[in-house]
Image (cartoon, rainbow, N blue to C red):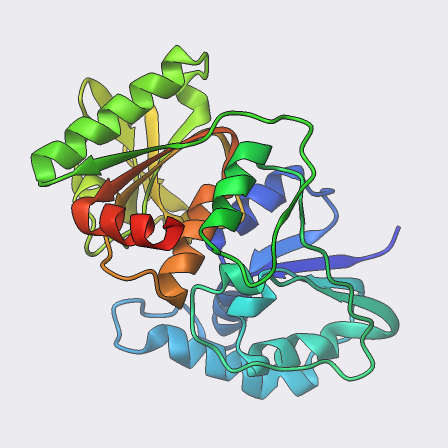
Length: 299
């Protein structure tokens, strides 16, 4: 009977949580909250205007001190991607005797933000992974993708992911399609497979394609309906970027367009996020340069 607010960074994660959370809980991404507040106070935002999202965030922050304390429970997920001021703008909405939970994972920090502390908070650290097969966790630890070793808690051992190298765009498509077929041969339905690009929507080759082999690709088209819902293409095989799929998972994952020359901190985090989306099986498609860099780490 209490009121709860769940806020995360990723819109796709908010959509996912919204489908499984209790109906009376309010579930939203942080920027959705800001846009809704702008609509109530300023009218419909002009999303074609330069800097509009920064403007709606600043308006939300400046008005936050006047927000009513409505919630008995506030959950902030993906805290590593939040600016400290965003967190501060949510706190006035928590009742005096309410509870605040902030969930964050340094290994999934995909955006550079200033760090922050919550005075008086109880900190609980957990390196357990219940989602990924043990074999995938072994590879994550071998590559040092997280600062501390990840503890595999899944009862399923699984198989080591296959790393497939490509030389050019044609090879990228060929190896990505082959990886999808391998997952299907292992009994994973196409509807339970996702192709994840390690590149963003602006740089990805595959995220611009309508098909992969014979499969139509279901992909985000970069625009929203008037109600704020994302617009998707028609297709039977889901393709997404690592950034947009963070917080979600699939039975079979093909992590593709993995292209780098050095396994730096940002690259480690993108790999960690992409690899930990898999519940049963993982295939990784890498450039020759990335293949060489990974080999150096393992050696």
